[in-house]
Image (cartoon, rainbow, N blue to C red; front, side, top):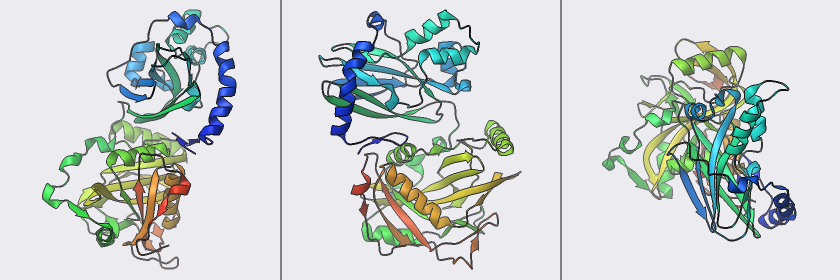
Length: 423
């Protein structure tokens, strides 16, 4: 079982190939051939990402909201439509089939996109329809040819993650892309990762040293002056920054915006209406004398209900990989404040939220192994501690240690590492 981005999970390769190849011939016959002489659709920008697998070479680029409006003459982002440009080169001799459902199972067809754009029922401009159709990605790529065009997907701001799936000649080609899209002011873009620590501050540790180092870290986040403790630091992650982000984005987590005028307004509106704001900023909490280096969130039904986490890079390195300390909580309510934009009421069972993260990353096939260490300090149900906003929480006092990987790992292959304690 291998993962498709955004939790599309497929059966085994053999079963998948048999099922898909049964209808691929019929689909090829059903395709019109008017696109065979179509001119190539140019890339929307120079932010291309390229991947090659055997006889297939794929290039992709995602235009920003402004670039999209310049290309199509309309603000498609406002209509929750995001075009993704693809160029697929067939280096072999047999016809290949591109499967747009792998990219986004809720994608819009070109005529549907035109329909949503025009908003006039039932009269649609045939010229506009033709323009969208001509710019779209065809499904067939004949041997020795190159096809390019747009797939009209649902909107994802920040980092756009998707698969490009191609079938043909008894082979399946699957490539995963993570493409940054300009437009949001994301918090981790402002971090100078290479200069957070001096070279002499970095500490390479073995497994025993990793456990000791993690257990010696502070129990909790603090306020800016480090005078008061807040939420428990109940997660640790081992992995490169790229692997960490790829793993979380693959699991459906979103990045967060910095606090500025526009994000404040969107937060205010979503809090009043109870609507979803996937990239809502989070308030600053402190470890190592600095605010979080990055924050991620997983929205549920609204801004009032989300899981969010904060991460800080530590000076430790394990097997050459960075070690992170973090805090995760589940929001079950929200109120507005002048100081922190929103103050969320958290679920007091922070261990449950910790275990949710473990399961979520495991099901996303982004987890290679995990274990537990001490360091938070126990707070029983009947003697809870409080965070900086006065919300109580209880915990067994452990931290889960997640060893993440950008390479998909089947849930049955995840290794449980004995780090000295178990919950």
